[in-house]
Length: 606
Image (tube, rainbow, N blue to C red; front, side, top):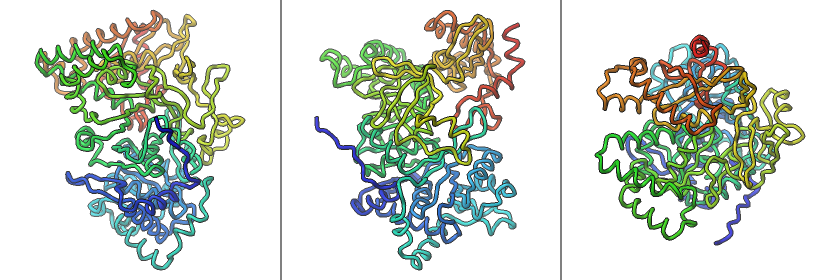
């Protein structure tokens, strides 16, 4: 096997974009789907348009090292804004497009954003509604022109179209011909390129300052562990204000020269996957849980013969799910090939992942049963781990050494050790610069050069297994230590359970709040002709409660006696970001949920 050199040039991300434009000007860097057509953008065009947009920002008054916010779903204009900002020495701050107005106002205000890029009228309205809290904001740039039509008269001088900013940049560039090159000549790896706000699961979001040195340091390890190169293709759909998508949409592709695809919407991901057929795919646990549920629903709706073939394939291929294809015996290869042509190939096509060489899950814990399920289907799913503060992935399962339930081994450049409490500590150039305007929080997170991750881990034969968040470990009234994530993930491996929130701290036994998977349970109810019209009416059906009780009983059978869920309450609505129950990345805010459902929790212990 050839040895690949993952040493990267001593260049910042914007400098590297210019280098790719020079080295491979006509090669496709990005494809964007508009009205059903995939439009290619070359490296030369990528760099040119980003430069024009950056120069346009300077024409609008963006100061040197100014801050530019972006509130949008993933699309070409997101990265043009980000790299354009970098090309003129600015810092990009992403904001979740699902954020309500108060959260948008907080992030833009705390980050001292000078100019904000909004995708459409919806996002523009959030910003305009918060203008009194954003005295520093100079302009609102709108990507979709139709978003300009309903702008109130008193705010029209604040709002400008994205295309107009690019045009301004062309004019400004004619007058300041050397500005981009001068900026890049002065740019250093130590400069801040991104501010990524944490999800805020335990309080106000914090702005993690990511330098170009951090980005350059993490990229080789990601590429080496996942086997990525210039021929890698990726579908970008997870929020770009999250470090996980940043590393696979900007960090790795710009350094390696690989291709990124933007679909029409996050709602068209499965259709886009079938069309793009990427050879690398990232899904957070909820995406894999949804794909798992979609396959189970499809199997419920199909004939008895196909269901039998599906169950037989899972039983036959499950025993060697952890093995890489290259390490399987002749008999195992023949067994898989037989079932692949019989049924597994069709299922891989159904979810759009037949061409994937490596698939990954991260950003939150995932039920091991879900990982085993996809690996049994032939999708080479590996679990990875990282933080915003580590500039993304710092451990990952090696494709040749997969141990389901672990997050693998540290990547290139990462030093690690465990504290006396078992907390994972890491050191390396990828450790972030600090929290914006919060030296106290920075000092509490980076101690003597070591990043304190807050995660308790066990090391098993060189592989790291995440036990739980240090702050989430619970002690029952009987003095037993419990890891709620283990219980919750076991329950969420059922296609009928979307969320499980364990209650156990200081209690006599374990109880839980359960949110059903509306789609899966709805299909199950329709097949039995149970009457329901909405989420609550479905939850109120006695047979649905029996279904969930059965799923919990199956989950309990996989856990130690002390971890068994004895009682549960079915939530009558979906957990909602707007209600403060989950973060923008769908992480559960335990304290908020415990407070909101205090009466229901107390009833479980009467």
